Length: 295
Length: 320
Picture 1: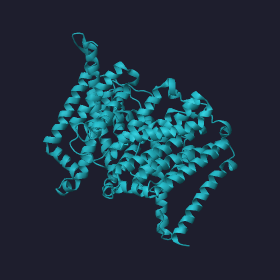
Picture 2 (picture 1 turned 135 degrees about the vertical axis):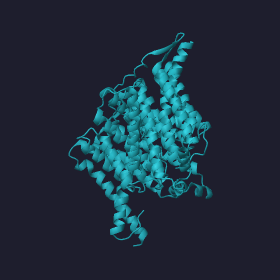
Picture 3 (picture 1 turned 90 degrees about the vertical axis):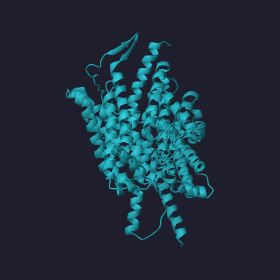
Picture 4 (picture 1 turned 180 degrees about the horizontal axis):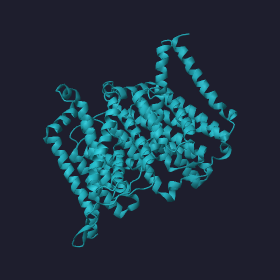
C-alpha cells in the first residue's frame, strides 16, 4: 500500500465521515435535548438532497445560496412536522415506541411525496464552481470539494459544541433535556425550544443531503440507508454526545473507505462488525456520559 | 352461568367462528386467487401476532423481525432448490431451529440495550441480513430470488397446502394466546410496565425478554417458511425492513394491547393492499397516512377502540 493510495482513501473516508456526522449530529441533538428519536431523520437528509437539486439544477441558483436555502427550508419543514404532529404524543405512555411509529409514518409519506414531485429517476447535482478540481501535494491528489465538506463539518462541530455548552440558549436546551417541567416553571417556553431544536437538527440533516448530492446520486429511498449508518455512528459515540458522534463518524467513515478499497462487495459488513464489537464490550457507547435511558 | 364460563364460552365461539370461516374458504372460493389471498391473511396474522408478543405484550419494539421471517423462508427455499423438494418439511424444521438459535445469540446482543436502541439495532441487523442475501447472488439468487419452489407430494396441491398452513397457523396462534395469558405472559406484561418491580419479585427481566424474543422469532420464521409454498418463491423483499414495518403497521392498526388486534390488523391490511394496491403505486403514502392517523388519533387500534365503544354503549363488561 503506497502513500498516495492511503491518503486518497483517507480523504474519501473523512468526507464520508463528515457527511455522516452532519446527519448523526442532528439525530443525537434531538435525542439529547428532546428525548425524541427521529427515525425519519434520514428522510430530511433526502429532502435536503432534492431541495438542493431543485434550487441548483432546476432553478439555476448559486450553490452557496442554495445550500443555505436548503438548510432553512428543510429546517422549516422539520419545525412544522414537530409542531403539528410530534408534539401531540409527548408524555404519552410508551412514548418511545410511538415516536418511532410516528416518525416511521413520516418516512413512508416523505418517500412517496418525493416520488410524486420529482419522479423515481436518479438526479444529480454539479459541484460548485471553484471546487471541481483537486489540490496536488507531491503525487497525492485531494479533491477540493471533499476538503470543503470536511472543513464545513469541522466548523459545525465546533459551532454546535460552543452553542450547546457556552451560550444561554444551549444551556436552556440542555436543561430542558434533563427536566422539561422545571425549565418550564422557570419561565422558558419549552415547546418552542423543542420546535427550534428540531428545526436546527433537521436543517443539519438537510444540509448534509445537499452537500452529499454532488458526490452521490439523489434517489428516493436514500433516507433509510442514511439513518442506519448514522444510527451505527450514534451507537458508537453514545446517544446525545456530540464529540462521540464525531468520533464514531470518523471511525465508520474510515473503516468503510478502506473496506471499499480492499473488499468492495462486502464493504458494508465492516461497519456492522465495528458496531457489534462495541456493543459487546461497551453497549452504552464509547463516550457515553450518562446511562442509557429506557424509553 | 358464572362469569368465567361465560367468557370461556365466548372465546370458544370466537375461535369456532374463525376456524369455520377459514376452513370454508376453499369450498366457497371461486378462484385459486382467493385461496391465495386467504393464505396470505393467515400467514401475516401469525407473523403479526408473534411480533406483537414482543411489542404489545413485552414492550420491545423490534424493527427486524423480517430477518427471522426471511430466514424461515430462505432455509426452506434454498434446501428445496439445492437438495430437492423432499427437503421441504425438514427445511421448515431447520429454519425454525436456525431462527431460535440466531434469536438467542442476537438477543444476547440487542437486549443489552433498551428502548429506542433495541429497535434500531434490530433494524440494523435485519438490514445486514438483507444485504448479505442481496449480494450473495451465487447462493441466494440475489435480487432475482428463487422461483418454482414446490412442496412435495400431496402438499403440492394448493387446497391441501392451504389446510396444512391453516392448521399450523391456528395452532401457533392458540399456543401464543395461551402463553400471553399464562404466568409467563403476566411477567412479560410486568416487564413492560415496571421492570424494577419484576426484579423485586425475583424474576429476571433480561432472561424473560430473551425468551420472548426467541419465541417470537421462532413463529416469525414459521410464518416465513409457510409463505414459500403459497407463492412458490423466495425473494429478498421478505428480509427487507419494510416487511418488519408492515407487521408493526398491522399491530398498530388492529391494536397492540389486544391479543387479536394484530390478527384483525393483518386481515385489514392484506385486504386493503389487495384492493387499493391495484389502483395506485403510491402504496406507502397510504399506509404511512393510516399509521399517522392511528398513532395520533386511535392509539388503541381498531379492536381497542371497538371494545371501548362497546364498553361505553353496551353492557359494562370486563373483557380481556
